[in-house]
Length: 177
Image (cartoon, rainbow, N blue to C red; front, side):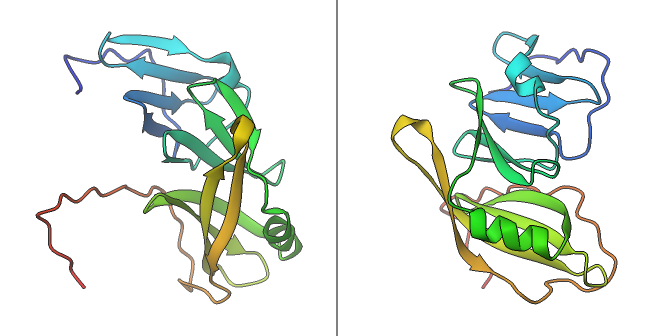
């Protein structure tokens, strides 16, 4: 439950750099990451979270995920243990992404899975995606498995994904399909 007004420490939030995990808001501006605790109306910084330049993130099961464009890996931040990790088990898929020159990757949360949207450089702005299951193994290591992947474009043309939104439906909501 969000209570009272929120005082913001003069920042400009980057695109795709605002999420909620475990009842706290996590955000990043151009230099730092901030965590807002609404129950205590307090701001703090997290040096471990700050160690990566994360953007275009999503949250699945209270873990933050983003595609590290420079490291060419899917990364995970666990706020409970305050640590970054690399999602294992995706080597072949990520190698294929590098081979075809994928760019502008965006992670999205969808039905407790992660969907990675990306553009293929060899195409004319086509947006493709992969749906990835996530599993936490003993010791906290997170493994991913590509469940579904589109080889053809979802969208053709020059589109840019700026922000996805999670939609929560209650049990009284009826299906649109």
